[in-house]
Image (cartoon, rainbow, N blue to C red; front, side, top):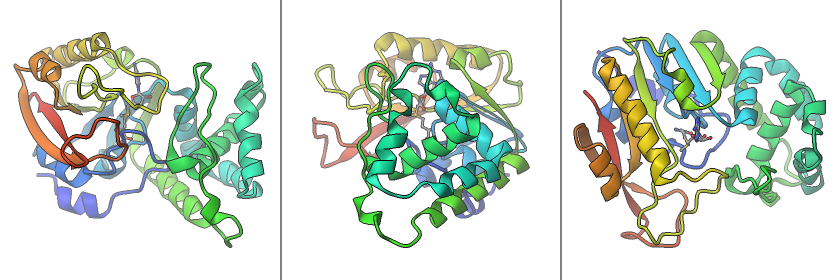
Amino acid sequence: MTDYKFLYQNRIRPFTKWAGGKQRGLASLLEYMPRTEISCYVEPLVGAGALFFLLRAKRNIINDQNAELINTYKVIRDDIMGLINVFIEWPCTKEQYMLLREWDRREDFLDAFSPTERAARFVYLMRFGFNGLHRVNALGQFNTPFGRYNIIGKEDPKSLIITDLLRCNEYLNAQHTTICNGDYEELIDLVPPHAFVYLDPPYAPLSKTANFTSFNQEEWTYDDHARLYKFCLSLDRKGIMFMLSNSNVPFIQDLYCHFRIHTRSLKRSIVAKTSHRKNLIEEVVICNY
Ligand SMILES: C[S@@+](CC[C@H](N)C(=O)[O-])C[C@H]1O[C@@H](n2cnc3c(N)ncnc32)[C@H](O)[C@@H]1O
């Protein structure tokens, strides 16, 4: 039986914050995990991978459609010293931040940089941008403002980040991990029958009138959620265990009514305009086991 308490106490901090990331509420999420040992862990919408960096499964498949994020995972695994050498040269200033942010403003400009340089830029922008947000405009250009005024002039704000990067490097090399960059549906034939799959999509809005503040380019429509439901059905038909998080709204409850639906209350990390019970948000955790 898996000792989740031990895993939680020894978890690795992800190399970035991420909108909707499961750092918060991770301990209570573990209550819904399968009790059997997980030999293959699959996270098709991995983001910063809070659960991935906890589980220490021997075999992992992670995926996200965000190319810069996935490039960063690969570089952290395969060229950590190259990444650190680039990252360490950049001073922690607003000027440097804006300079790096500009890299995706000119067509094909980003492509002129090596994967290692792009990964260093990604880590820098995510760690020194406002609130660790990955926000892009309609053209897909990173537009989070500089956010770390409190670190300017401080001695070594980068050492903590480098420690995190080194731990993630060690983890990615110790746990055999296939890293994919594409739509989650492309994984269906890669998932072995004995795998456990965790799905953490962009959450459904809390009400039809809610202004869904996703801080990301892609907000999911009803059809997107319905498509993910079909993916879950395919997993279920193959006898593959899955667990899915979402907000507790009627259409998600209706879609998944044939599965086990647990509810939990969590403090919001990003507050939307509508206020629901003093910063508390109700989530569902849906399982087919
Ligand atoms: C809520 S975040 C996951 C957070 C993650 N559980 C964590 O702890 O950081 C959802 C992720 O789904 C990714 N995503 C959205 N649509 C996708 C798609 N069709 N295929 C693959 N990834 C997608 C987004 O880029 C985002 O990183």
